Each structure stands twice: as C-alpha cells, then as structure tokens.
Image 1 (spheres, helix red, strand yellow):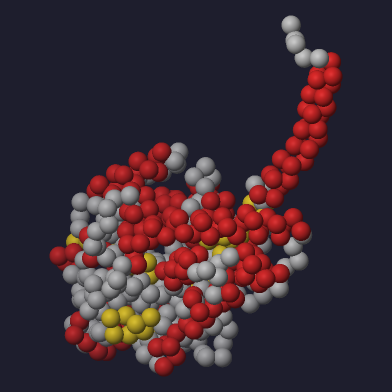
Image 2 (cartoon, rainbow, N blue to C red; image 1 turned 120 degrees about the vertical axis):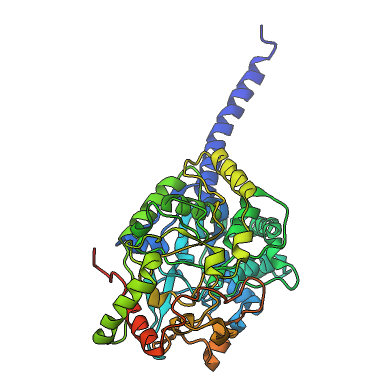
Amino acid sequence: MSTLSPNWKRWLAIAAIVLVVVGIPIAFTAWYKFFREVDDGPWSSLEERFKYGSIGAEADAGLPYWIWVALPRVFPDLLPRDGQGGWASFGIPWEEGHEMPIGFTKKTVGFPRVANNCAICHATSYRTRPDETPKIVAGGPNHTGNIQAVLRFLTNCAKDPRFNADILMAEINNHASLSWLDKLAYRFAIIPQTRKALLAREPQFGWMNRPNWPEWGEGRDDPMNLTKYFMTKLPVDDTVGTADFPSIWNLGLREGKWLNWCGETPSPLSVIIDSALGLQARPSTVVSQAAWIQEFAVKKRPPKYPFPIDAALAAKGKPLFDQHCNSCHGLGAGTRVGQIIEIAEVKTDNNRLITWTAQAADIANQTVEKLGVKRIGITKPKIEGYQAVPLDGIWLRAPYLHNGSVPNLTELLEPEEKRSKVFYRGYDMYDPAVVGFDTTSPEARRLGFRVDTTIKGNGNQGHLYGTTLPPAEKKALIEYLKTLGPVEGEA
C-alpha cells in the first residue's frame, strides 16, 4: 500500500509531466545540435564524390567547420610556406570555385565538420606554363601535399595558448552569423572538446616527431609505420619507411596482383578499407564506402601527355620497352606485373621493407576483425622486395622509385652516380625536357621540400634497368613511355 499522500502524488505527477515536457525538447536539441547526420552531396559525378565526398570519418575525426576556418587565420605563424594561402599552404590542390580543398570533406554531424578522404593523397596538380591554372587529376599521386605538416599544424595549434574560446570565437564571428545557441555550443563545448581531442591524438604521432628524424616532405608519408603504430600499438622502433603516394587510376589492372609498395595486400578493396580506417572512417560503413571508391578508381583513366609526342621516335621506343620493361611494367601483359621483385635484384633503398613485420600484420588483422570489418587480411610477404607496378600515366607520377628519390624519367635511366643527390619536390610546374616536375628552379626551391638522398629512407640507388642503353635509345624509350595510358575516356 502506498504511503504517499494525495498531494504528493499530485506533485510527482506534475513533476513527471514537466520532466517530459522539458526533457524531450532538450534531448531533441542535443541530438539535433551534436549527433544528427545529414548525407553529403548529391554529387554530379563519381569523381566529384571522390574529391569531396565523405567516407564516414566526420563523427570520430571531424574538425568543427568554423574552427577549421579560423585556425589558419589565428595561427598563420604555424603554417608552412610562410603562411601564404591558409590551408593551401600545405600544397593541397584546391579547385577554383570550390569551398573545400580536394581531399577535405564537409558533412553535418550535429554541426558541420571537416574530415579527410582518399583524395588528400590521391589527386595530382600540374601546370604546363607559369600563368596556367593548375590542372587537377583525381586518382593521381598528390606530389605537392605535405600531410605531415597538416598533422603537426593541428597539434601545434592545440598546444598554443591562443587556442581558446575568446580568440577563436572572435575570429569565427568575423565569418559566421551563428545563433546564440551555436555560439554557446562552440564556446563551452565544441572548442574545449576539440582542443582536448587534438592533444589526446598527439602521442599517436610522437614517433615521427623525434629530433633529427627524417621528414616525409611533399607527396610522401610513412604508410606502414602509420599503420603499425595506429593499429598495433607495437613499441616504437628505428625503422623509416618513407614512400610516395601512388596513383590509383586504372585500379582494375591491379586486381589479383600484390599492392602496397612491398606487396603487403593482395586485394584493392582491402587497401582502400585499410586506408579509410587510417583516416578514421566509421567501421560499420567502411566496406560500403570502399566499394564506391573502388568503382571510381577502376573507371578512372590517367590523362594524356599534354605536350607534343614524336610518333616516329615513340615507335622506335616500343620494342625497347617490350624488351627491357614490359615483363615488369606492361599494362597487364607482363609476366611479372604486380609481382614482388626481390631486393637482391632491384637493389633499391630497402628501408621501406624493414618497417613491416609478420607480427604487425597479425595484430593489424586482429584489430580490424574486432572492429567487425571483413576484408582480405594484410600480410608480411615471404619475398623481400618491391612489387612491379604498371606504368600507366607514368609521365605524371614523378618523382620515381617507391620513395620518390629520382626526380624524373631522364634520371631514372641514368646510373646511380649521375642521379641528383639533392633536389626539391612539391612544385607543380611540369618540365617536358626531363619528363618530370621542375625540381631545381628558385621557385621549386621556395615551394618544395629538399630531398637529400643520403638521408635514411631516401636512397636513390638501384633499378638500373635500361641505364646502359645508348643515349638515342634512351630518348626513344622515354618518348614511348609518354604514350602509356589509356587516356581519359578510353575503356
């Protein structure tokens, strides 16, 4: 039997009604302002989606949009390239008329958030003359982007005392007319929590910030160490696995062949899944996200060489390619295309090989499985070497070798002693005279990253195929290499 008086019962009923009346709007407002998801798009094409579309990383790794806008303005002194151009100072391709740089997504999860997708590493820009608007090729290697600098910038901003609500809100208010509720949310929740999250992430990248540790520079990262320390929590070691961002166009040519520079994965879809997880894509949707990315990469074709080609000279180069290159680098026709070539034969810098271990592969696979993600697992190949890639669109994939240590095709056909020991990578002006990008001019030095091939992981030795050919045959071979495609629009 209840001991409550009628008055108490009445007051409890009133209190319950008030809680419902007040609580439901509060709960709805909290959901709407912090958790509601709005699909991005629609996209005019699969390529547009590849460049700007979400892969599901905004909820866990998204930077609040207005903080993203404010950071380069509040912290210009922490930007590379003297702080010129805001986010563009990181060398990320940015198309005219677009709100976001390529590889940066904007999606509402409660509030607008910015994350990254695969295009941040896989979209190329180039110019054929100084006054030309850069041409953007989705699916190509982002040879100008400094991803390491982006990671460091975010951490350094969070560590700076200027990262506070007063300063950031003053800058945000210069660009946005937020509601009073949004201003409160930014001031008391979003800004403090963002700073906390960025500071918590710093230890994940401590291994790459050690004193005197080799820099990645433009167009490169240390992919297997990133995977190792992000997924496996193995102790930090002294391996350096600096590697170029590869092209991912014509991905259908790679089906059934080994991928990653050292052949750690036998499945294109698995490579995309692991890369997306590295960008903190949501595990529950990462497989479906990877499927449309794979569809784009299979359909995408490299662009045609933008300068005149001597057809007669290229015809002379074809039999030289067939004799010296096709078995490893033909467009699907060679017997060793996509296979791992032993380091004892290819003799290129072996540091990238050392970074990955069978133990790391096992733990990474277990980690992905615990996330509920089904894919063909990553391995440590039994053959120690580098996989032979098809040379489609090779003219736009400079610098060369797995670590980007040879600046152009002309030098790739030279013996080691004639290759540049120092050059600057990251400038987008194309130099048809050497078939590669400008790596020596004052502007290349100003904008580019200084590659010193004597530094650990930067070795430019090896891959001596074709280096003993007479000069006339080298010239013919290079002329033929310019023709390798297929070009845009071809099946």
